[in-house]
Figure 1 (tube, rainbow, N blue to C red):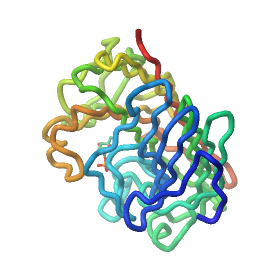
Figure 2: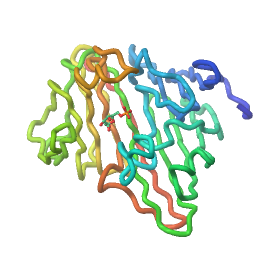
Figure 3: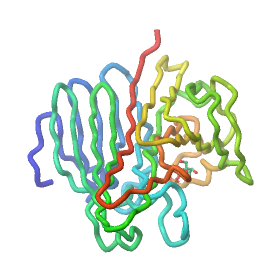
Figure 4: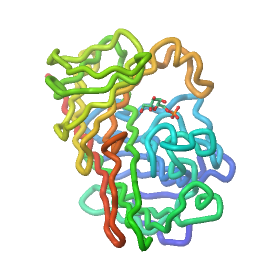
Amino acid sequence: MSITLPDGITAIALADDYPALQIETADCSATLALNGAHLTHWQPSHTDRPVIYLSPTAILQQGKAIRGGVPLCWPWFNAHPTDPGSHPSHGVARIERWDLVSATVEDGSAIIELELKASPGIEAHVPFPFQLKALFNLGQTCSIVLETTNLAKENIAVGGALHSYFSLSHIDNATVTGLQHTPYLDTAARPEKSAVQTEGELRFQAETDRIYYGSDLPARIHDAEWKRSIVVEKAGSLTSVVWNPWIEKAASLGDLPDADYQRFLCIEAANARHDTRILAPGSTHRLETRFIVENLS
Ligand code: TA6
């Protein structure tokens, strides 16, 4: 890394040729891999357990997606919209090496900017010139911004998600509020089906893969065992994704222990499906999320 790091931020390697930043400040501990600009750990000082889930069998290899953390899905969400067989699921940003632009510590928070530069490997999947930045503010709260600027002379379509994995005591102890009365697409159903969530508290008893539409409300994960809530805020997004693979899908994932579906829940600020954004030449879109942990008495 060519920039000078401040006290509280250290360059480390999570594996061979796998650089990362280790953040240890008054307000939090965090780890940020340059592959994918991928936050793999965040724990504010007022909670005694990690907030972000990371699979113990995550693959830490350049070019591979990390199971867990906060994958940056860009410039499409899930399968490529027109040619899924030729392009990686959830886009290229999460599997490419990002450049560190700046890293500072201010009032106990680490403020870090990374940029993804175009390359022949990226251009094979992303047919337009762009500027893509990832901005992290890691302290008592965690803020992540994925900022796309259209450098082309024509409109571009940009989708994606901040695919956040949250650590749980056990999925049976977790409920999610903030999505009541919100329409969603159940993408785990065959065929997919539309519905509206009626219950105030969402609980989990099966594979759950939902794209909630029209909601820019925060969602809140309640963990009764760990006596804490995680508030997930967002901006620049009108689709929220809630995902837990459950037993069968978890067993099919080689980078996730079979039983670890019990240990996490994804709540994602997304630009999925019809919420894909059309950017005019020179315009910028910011997809944002913010995590706040509240200890319950
Ligand atoms: O965000 C939910 C989802 O789209 C699920 O359908 C599942 O595919 C998940 O993302 C994980 O995708 P990945 O490519 O990381 O295995």
